[in-house]
Length: 493
Image (cartoon, rainbow, N blue to C red):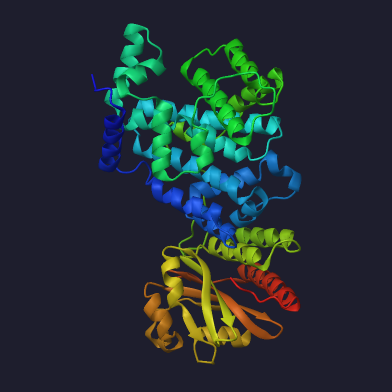
């Protein structure tokens, strides 16, 4: 039997994490998501960029934004950037944290029945927390969801990385009639919730989330719980209900009702109302792609973009048109920066680009600078993408001078080399095809949206049906830039 030394248990756990690879490379994911949540002016763009890097997460975010919870906004949401505006950066971030952890662990532990069982409970706990939060009209529903999903982080880590220790815990429960909490303490030297909080601290998760990983016993409260107490109570209640539903084939409604009733007062709800929320969560989980993927082994997410041989999605026109509709829907309330993010995403997704980058003119310096972009390693490229505004006979100045979309099908054609400037050739040697969408405000070039493909475009490049929404997108961006100029406010991204 292992030595009951908590420090040795944690050292062994982290040794195995390093040997087998950090769960889903989760530390880097957490860093990107938390950076976006805590950001200032660029938080919405950074969250959009983080979500778009994962097609499966993109679909989950769009489903959430179009769910009944946000139907009050009365419009379809087709872009992640608009979803971030409607749902909120923090809510999207919480969804991303939970989703990334569960998806990553599911892939890493494909052969572990115990770990899969724990993940089923985690996802179901998230469903219960969302239903309860909505029923209680509580704010920050997605924070409650991720707190509930990660409430069992310690259990997931132990079953995945310390399966030998977990077997001893289970055997002690079965053979000696000891409850799981005591058996865990006897075997590991510390509780599962302590393991979870320790790992969460190592990953740099938010303090509120870490604090919610404590088991909160039901109690009668005279005063309403503060936010931290409420998160801890709803997470514990959700996890307990999920355990009953997943561990017992014929879960007794009475047992679930007892749990719901015991926490109802703490959470400011009626017992029957809470029980109904738990039952609703049980039904909705069966339809959730994340829950199904965990329960039945991972399968490709349905509804992801299918790509044509040219690199463009098969339904490029539909994606572009819906993106433009999203922009129109918020054009009176969104900032120029937010609209630019939506425009960039629409072009990036709609044309299936390898990279999409916004360039803006700086009149004081007489140069065009790359400001923001989507695509692999774009952030590293941006400082290198600078050129002078003085006219040169190349595709970029030609597009800006004529205020027309420029498409280059074969950038590798030696006969066309003189039209591609050296700064571009040096920075982007892998590009086969590219597009330039100029933005001309008050009859002067303000910048452009650049996109490229690392594969040759087939056919005619962009057809008339695709150019129509792209020109509408340009018009919306130009309108936003001109309005900003009228307010004597420079467009700084």
